[in-house]
Length: 217
Image (cartoon, rainbow, N blue to C red; front, top):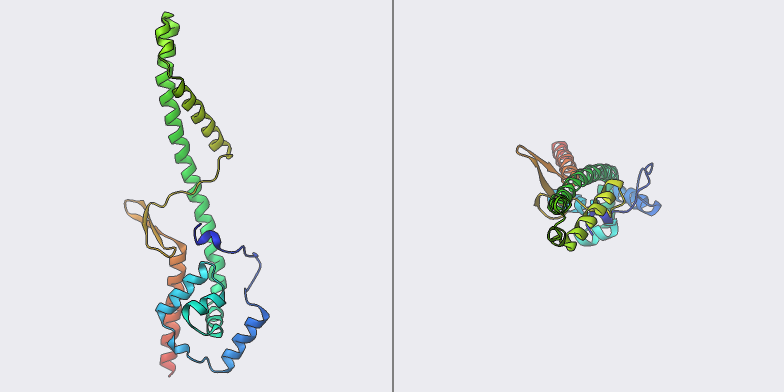
């Protein structure tokens, strides 16, 4: 099971995943002056965001990163992790549907080719038998191939009707781990999973805000 498939279902109109207790911790952390916030660098932020997009709860993130949970909650609130996750899941679902549709079309074409192969191979022997009444042609028909042909037709009908078991399209490209995949779409086009793009956007915002804070100091 991929990390994406483990993401919890989200209510479309939900605006946050904080509990009342979480909100209180965030306010308390702000009142205390954001202790140790300067220890969080881009590398830690990237790791936390990756864990969050993979469905890890705030408590687990704080334990894995060895950071105070209040700090993790504050960073999530400050950089709108929940909104990013909603965008990530929406884009991931859209991307998955498109890739599955493309995979099913390729699969249909492949099954058609197999069916045509058996039709030609078996059909030529049937035609010769009907034309000559020579039973040698009929006896040369491999019933195992007939069975394979019938199974191929059945599979094709299921795929076309949408009754075939869902199959995930194989990723063609580089799997860089932690949910980041680069897929070759054409000679001059590659596709990067929305997870890495969203993390990149968040890190840019984080870096910009840190620079602004440094200027103020």
